Amino acid sequence: MISWLQSHGYWPFHVAWSEWTSTLLDGLLKTIEYAALGFVAAALLGLVLALMRTSRIALVRLPATVYTELFKNIPLLVIISVTYYGIVQFGIKLGVFEAGALSLAIFYAAYLSEIFRSALVGVHGAQREAAQALGLNRWSTFAHVVFPQALRLALPGTNTMLVDLLKSTSLLTVIAAGELMAVGNSVASQTFEQMEVFLVIGAIYFALCYPLSQGLLWLERRVRAGSPLSPARSRRLRAARELLETA
Amino acid sequence: MTGGQTPVVTIEGLVKSFDGRTVIDNVDLTVAPGRIVSVIGQSGGGKSTLLRCVNLLEKPDRGRIVIAGEEVFAGGRVVCDDLARLRQSVGMVFQRFHLFPHLTAVENVMVAQRKAAGVPEKQALETAVRLLKRVHLAHRGLAFPDQMSGGEQQRVAIARALALQPKVLLFDEPTSALDPESTREVLRVMRELADDGMTMVIVTHEVPFARRISDRVVFLDGGRIIEQGTPAEVLDHPTHARTREFLTSFDEITDQETHS
View (cartoon, rainbow over the protein chains, first blue to last red):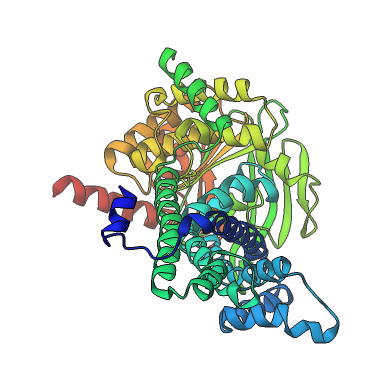
């Protein structure tokens, strides 16, 4: 079939993609690694920043506010260049992977902290009070009352940021990070088929991001419906159902 | 005080002000075990604040609070070393229920048992189901708060407050946010609790209900206790002009409602 299309001039591809498969897969894997590590680190840092920003103590709030405003207003590309090339002048040399993941974390933590902060503030103060009145300590109040409700509020924005971060890994190509876009550049420069190469690269990004964002939408719906996400809660609700039915 | 039993709640010389405005002005109150005290009075008269001081959701400025023989507040500061444990022995029911919206009814009743008192899962579930039965809501155990009526939510909130076997239940205008039918459901449950000997302090606008259920009625106005006594004394034969005025305005509203 393929050979027939090729011999009759109907085959649209000029690049011998089969020769590039393993290179592309390497790039794809790198992209996923950058996105996963960058996102987890950004989410953790973002949560810390958000908690700092909701603190009653001004001295705790201030550094978090400065951080957020600073990195929200600097392009990611500049942050990448500084962490990889810039700080070398001060004798700090980060590996490509470290610099790349760190840049993503630094940048997206600023955005995520905004989302998390508004989610934390969005949980009604009376909820904390009700938890306290039940004798829950500060940690339990946060872990079992505030956090789950804030999570619901934060999920839509967080999910958008995750997909955005995944796409932004393509900027790491400027430090030759070996991710998908960098692989694309390398293939394009060797085959001179820019249009075809970048269309294929674009299609791969789409194939990665679309299922991810759909999956996250599904997760949002489940969380909003209060469906159990952990096996422990599933078991608890099952046991409750049995006991309530016999009650 | 009855029969020399230790009072469940003792409040002496309680003072609380917000931004220089005195909301609670030198209030003394004692609640003996099994007794039901209703606190009536105008909105903004300090009723809710008084209640919130009992479990120290609000920190008083001055005075002394003793819960079940244990001094928890004295000399202007909290002297209770374990605030969480204090609150477990004082159940609270809020005007707007404040159930946890991400949890089902049964989980709402379980969460404090598990996370505050460390009750094992199975036992906490059994207690929760038993309490939901007690407030006539076993059939709604797996519903989320936003799927329930106000009356159902408030009854779950009562079950939640009962889950840690508190020594006293505080009700902060438990029916003010409810329609008449829901109000009836909630008052029924409260009456059943009273029959079971639960100690309760009820801030309420339901004067007829307060008359039926209370051992003692306290009229609070401008942060002071104007008078207190049996329902017959305070509600039928008030000695203070201010109490009479307040109760008359209630009668007028009731009259208007019956005539309209």
